[in-house]
Length: 188
Ligand code: GRF
Image 1 (spheres, rainbow, N blue to C red):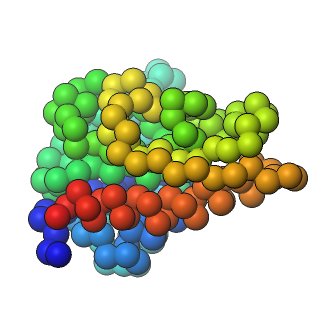
Image 2: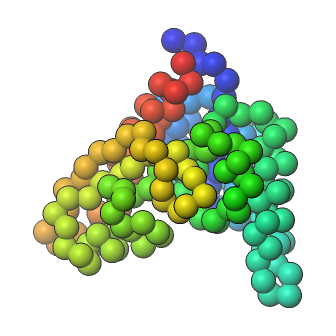
C-alpha cells in the first residue's frame, strides 16, 4: 500500500536501525544528527537530506543549553513537515517543548522491555540484574525519558556468556525488523 507522508529519523551513532529502514523502503525525507556519526554517512550515501544540529555548538560557559538545542531541532523538523519524527539511537535528551509541538508524533525504540531498564545503560543493567529475557520496545516518546504509550515489544533471550555487545546486537537484529514494520503500518 502507498505511504501517506514521510518521516524524519534522528541518530547519534552507528545508524544500523536507520540503515534497515532505508533498505526496507521506509519513506525518509531527512536524517538529523546531534553529532558527526556513521548514521549521517549512511543517509548521505542513500541520497537522503541530512541536517547536523551539533550539540557541541550549544555549550555556553561549559553548560549545555538544552532549550536552545531543542528549538534548533524543532526548526529543522518543521521545514520537513514529517508525519513522524523517529528516534533511532538519538542520544540527546530533548526539552519539553518538542513533546508538545510534536505530540504523539515522536517515536523511539529502546533496547529493553519497558518499563524495565530505562536509560542509556539498559542492556548492561538487564545483564547485571540477571534477567533471562529482555528485548526491545517501540513507543511514543513523551517528556519522561523512555516512557509513553507502547506501540510494539519483542522479547530477546539472554544467552549464557552474553556480553553487553552480543546481547545488544541480538536486540538490534529484532529492532531492524520491528521498527521499519511498525513505521510502514503507521504510514498507511
Ligand atoms: C538501538 O538499540 C536503539 O534501541 C537504541 O540505540 C540503538 C541504536 O543502534 N536507542 P544503531 O545506532 O541504529 O546501530
